[in-house]
Length: 384
Ligand SMILES: [Zn+2]
Ligand SMILES: [Zn+2]
Image 1 (cartoon, rainbow, N blue to C red):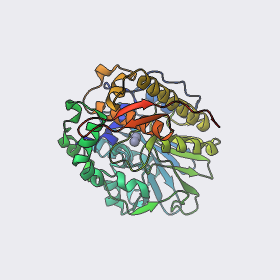
Image 2 (cartoon, rainbow, N blue to C red):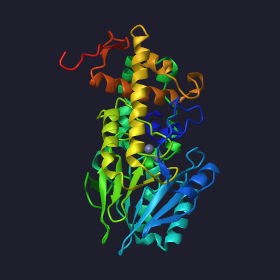
Image 3 (cartoon, rainbow, N blue to C red):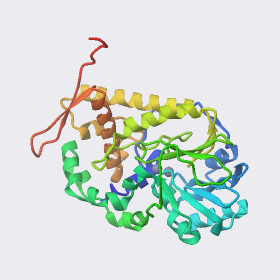
């Protein structure tokens, strides 16, 4: 069942490539690009250079094979005793060579790695953690809430009848109900992702002697997504939470334990306190203007929420699936195929859950075997 792999493959979606759904009206990001060489490389479709962006902070592009995102920006945080590697990248020989090229540039032998930290467990971030850890003995750390997002943990939940029941309640048609290719998930190494050795929580300091780097928990894209703030250099490693140009997938699935969109919006608001920092993202290029970029993304989801309400209001008791097919997608719904349809459904469902919690719509439970139906609720004025 590829819902397991979807959180990893959804990175494809973020660029709107391959028929992937993406918002129709991307808003101009009010960011100041600081990674000029990175942006130039991005535009030229090349791998950007390895760079020491601050003393002891290295940015290392690691190839993601056959993917429009092209690379993950891993970071090496050097200390007196060794180094922590953040988001080592996709598990592939080419990626490993890229990572080792970064180590060489930084003068860091691979066995001097003292820790591995992942912002979240998607394949393009956490894939190489196992190999790096096995070679160095370094422990792997992630946020405590991210453990449940490991595919090995959610495999059972997503392969069970729960997914089929949930899809039926959404009104999904047979082709979307059909199981996706679990061989692909197997092939991608989804189930080989490493378990953590260390669990992190919001505000924790990384084990980096002589340096002050703290965990900023930013759930939304995944439940245990984290950013990392280096107080001495005032840089914020933003993972996939905040990127300069594209917006990460925020999807609701039957396995979701939290409300992903509400969490994501709260996590964006929480970044307002880091506006002085330079953002070091996991894709694309470095930038400044964290609060402005976060505000743009909040607005972006607000516009989408209004569109969801408009579609429901114009429909006769729409199902979640009806809404998914009637929303605007950058390439047109006809161009969205295969698991991308399910990803689009997850994303629509996240908005519907959010709007229900905000009291803007009602989900009317269907009779057994029938899908749920959606209804817009009248806005009650404050004090009314
Ligand atoms: Zn991701
Ligand atoms: Zn990513």
